[in-house]
Image (cartoon, rainbow, N blue to C red):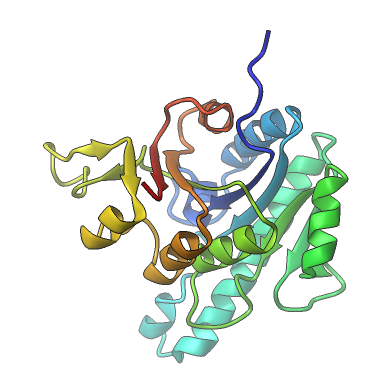
Length: 240
């Protein structure tokens, strides 16, 4: 008998870099296909899935500095990049027969719905996957903050932060072989140790709203489903 999901409604944060795979730029077709398959697995379990996608595989706000573009403008360019990723992910999911809606924080009615909280919740209740694009719609805020904000607005049970690293470490594991991985950590500890779970605005919002965060690797096949079933993957952040 298959285990039941631990969570009813989740907010999955996907970085733009996750869509690029081993490339530094753009969308890797195989990675997109695999991601859609992983998301389908949890959708088939009856889990309500909302997604916030980043845009770093196409344009990062920090690039604007090199191009001598002001910060607000480069952040808006980054928001548009997230819309491209959201449409690609929508297409991949719908090819697998999953009804999907893209909602954008900046109105662009020809290609997506504007973000409306009640409408997003209704979509989730009807079994549709909702992809939130264009961040918060404001410059100076990251897609991590957008993920925390949307998780709070839709009353998500957990924020799943899918990364290229398999959890939170006390120091950078790519540079330190003796880096120690946490399986569980409190918001307070993570903040005090400056562990860079996500940016401080996003983290503070999750702490205030008591939204647990699970940081895990999306590179390992089946990890998303294991996370949904409550298995020990990644690092769990909550109030102790």
